Amino acid sequence: MPFSVVVMVQYLYEDGSKDRGAISEIVADYIQTISSKHPFWNLSLGADHVMLSCHDWGPYSTKSVPNLFTNSIRVFCNANTSEGFNPLKDVSLPEINLNTGDTKSLFGGSPPEKRSILAFFAGGLHGHIRHLLLGQWKEKDPDVRVYEKLPLDISYEWMLKSSKFCLCPSGYEVASPRVVEAIYAECVPVLISDGYVLPFGDVLNWKKFSVVVAVEDIGNIKKILMGISEAKYLKMQRRVKQVRRHFVMNGPTKRFDLFHMIVHSIWLRRLNMRILNRG
Image (cartoon, rainbow, N blue to C red):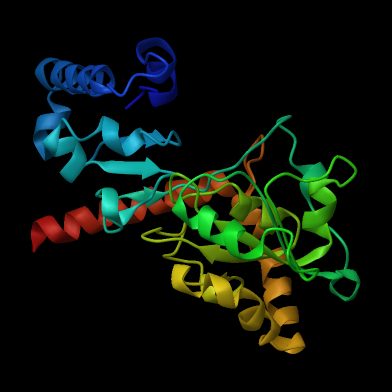
């Protein structure tokens, strides 16, 4: 379904307003139009239709259309189960922050034996998880390097590429571009979130190349990471390098890259819907 939540926010949302109703109304009007003019929506009540949005309000935009919310395959960065994301039919989209459109300069980093920083994070106080993280660790430990704002003489990319583990806490929403940034920099992601469905979990075993830290264990981050043996860390870091190709957009596309991973995830969801309907 070729509508953009980003464009709707740009033209319909008034800064400072709490009213997002116009966005959901446009989506509802769109579904009404295609369902009245064409037969395809009504044949499956939207189950064979796909929408994609990496905007935080993507899930909200679907709530006013029950069949879109319940039946359609929704591809979201904000893959939050507490906001109605259903892993059986919805697809988790990796959030990628590209300042220039080029990714190759973000790839790689120091070899494992030269990564002198145990863990790194830099980012604003967006959401309660980051408040907890910065409250516990902000500029308090030379091994767990947590900043709200990096000093001007320190490069963010250099820190990623010099750290063994990169902390990836949720912000206002569950997804964070820091997960992909870590993977690009060959830094083992440390996932700190509630209700986040990780991308491509049907085929990728995230336990093999990332660390999950519960929100209530934020104070134990150093203990948890120090408890990972060197041998286990090296295996995880190698696997980070191996899975990176699945998070890269290419033009033209390449086998197993981000585009193909998304399409494969959508195909699996459509297969799930067929099985459920037959059952």
